[in-house]
Length: 86
Image 1 (cartoon, rainbow, N blue to C red):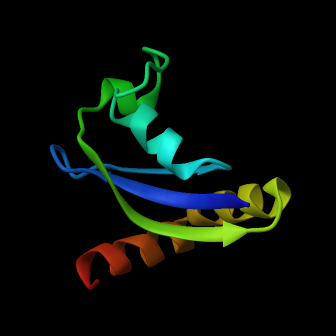
Image 2 (cartoon, rainbow, N blue to C red):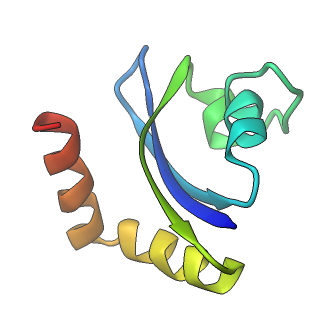
């Protein structure tokens, strides 16, 4: 299974949109429990990062497609609506 997901920094309120096949491990990487690239967005922008939204997909292609949709203006509007009115 693959996931398209949205995390939010509890420090700055910034959001990050991504996709992965191992959500638990990816969240640990975002929160620096497991080492990550020092140039990554979530490394440079302080956490802790909390999962605010996820969708499950049977393959990576679909997860990437949804990740790209969430990164559009319409997708960001959808995410902000979720965050403001959970």
